[in-house]
Length: 359
Image (cartoon, rainbow, N blue to C red; front, side, top):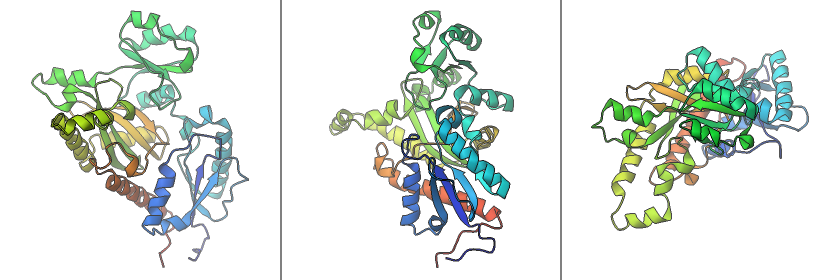
């Protein structure tokens, strides 16, 4: 491999150093996919971990921050390290993806405020820094609402409030700083729109996820759940993967529901993403270059955006729920190939940074 004329053909990925932030499998699985494909992009990637000595940018043409968020609030030491790299990159005219300041825009309250100003359809929110602020925040958002951590993407410590009685027994100390979010019932919208509709959307709550990189969008998954807040832990795929449900299907039960879930998820992954332009706008409004965005689809085809996850969890396809039935290995491989193509698009836009040949 030879350097190009300017000597800036490296891509620097900045990740958390040991003990300095949570780790997700996404980055390693992506690199493994590049290696399996003998992709020349792999030769250009260099990893720098926060907490290490100063990053060397002498031959770098693109910096990608792959760090947990909200960065400044949750990982202040890593934020300072990342900002030093970002500032030096700016001085050198090096392109940066997912700037550390943008990675600090993803607390639920700040995210909601930015989206409201940008006209992105999303849930109204009110931040809560201490328990004395909680009643006022609930009054501003109104019922029904949810109270959750302002800084976490996970579904832990989420309380659903339907009226004043629920608010009276709320214990929010464990989740402060918190946020109060208006709770939309998309399932009820489907039921009101067409009482004769017996689709999955009218029987269950749902959440779609799509990846956004620049102006490009790719579907990830479509989950359904009997619970209002839908995640991997409570989705119907997780239930159908249980030993009990697997066993009863051997006797001919529950096949119809599983087949419906699989068909809906497959159609979502392989079809055009509804609201793609809105998803791109939501990510750009936060100042981000890439993120996994969670949202729901309303009966008229419009979408409501729930959250953007710039540090998302995407494991090897073998580790996906119902991997075989969902063809997850091929889907994850396809997704990472798309990631690589997107990065190469950024490289092609930079005259000094071209992907090396495999020869």
